[in-house]
Amino acid sequence: MLTKLARSIVILTALTAASLVTNTALAEKIKDEGSFDASYVKREVGPVPDQEGHVLLLTESSGTSSNPGGLIDGLPTTVYEIADLRQGKGPHQGYVIYAKGSDRQVVKFDGTVTTTMKDGKPNTTMKGKYVLVDGVGALAGVEGEGTYAGYFTAEDKFHIDWEGSRSQPKDSVAQSKK
Image 1 (cartoon, rainbow, N blue to C red):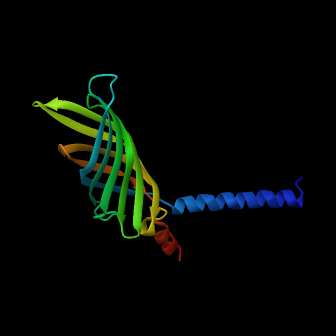
Image 2 (cartoon, rainbow, N blue to C red):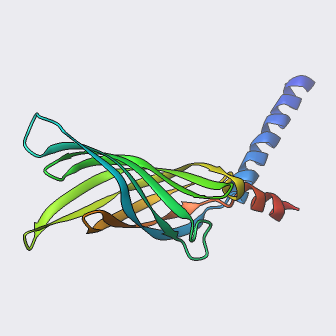
Image 3 (tube, one colour):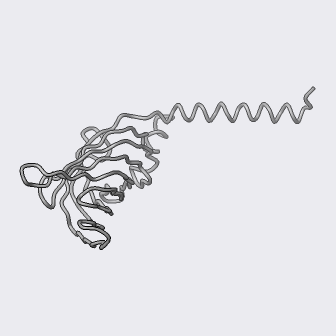
């Protein structure tokens, strides 16, 4: 037989668990998709002398996001990337920062770059996964993840399409509870 204290602890634990389930349900994910076009602002290439065509790239790019009906539509976009490529193929990772005024969202990405030759010209594509890691201002509290795929449109320009899911910003969730 449970003592009064043990019974109280069991009831409190059950209520806490029920509260967590309810809060998780309220933080429902929303389908989110968009794209951005960016151009290199800085590009440093470090040759790695272990094999022909092995380079380490450190880049900074800028552009503008397209996210119709979403939170980051039209926001200036900055991409910081590092890629370890052998003959134009290999892993890349970095951060995409969407920011305007005091609103900012930071997204970490991790994927692969592939380059093939098409009509004597390099055809470079990239794909991978992303996760939202930080947000401030109107983008505070947004959580999300998804996938991306992209391609180069010129030697110094590229296009990225992304899709995934995200939560609402903290302020909009608080507003909906009132």
